[in-house]
Image (cartoon, rainbow, N blue to C red):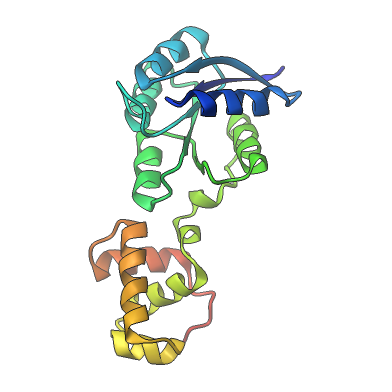
Length: 200
């Protein structure tokens, strides 16, 4: 039995591109497309697809709100947010609303197909964006851990062999990516990753 997928994106080129990619798979069938969130919810109710792919920034009803509506109206339908926005705050918002996975539009076709099949099978998706630490480069994770441990900018610069201004740049970038505003929030994130980089 083919996986029935509904595609929701306000860009026609994206919808047709996804349709072409998915239709080429022997185990996937595109059962419909929607140009906005309201249409996506309506079609999800009537078509009862196995999986819905939703863009975040759609008119009428955004992707996160559409995920919430689908969770209430047809909880058996699995949802995957597919977006150009890779910031962790968008990932968290989508998953908190009930999305089963988040795949960046910059991801490979193989990653998207893997997510669809995993979500449909009830497995844990393997998308890199499911783990927020993977949004960061190795250097950003190093800086994050040192900040979380209480090290000041000059000491971080010395330990990593970079300039203080570089540390400031990394700090601003990782706070933005993770959607945190304080060292305490950063500490919570860093503890969740573990200390496998051997910085101590």
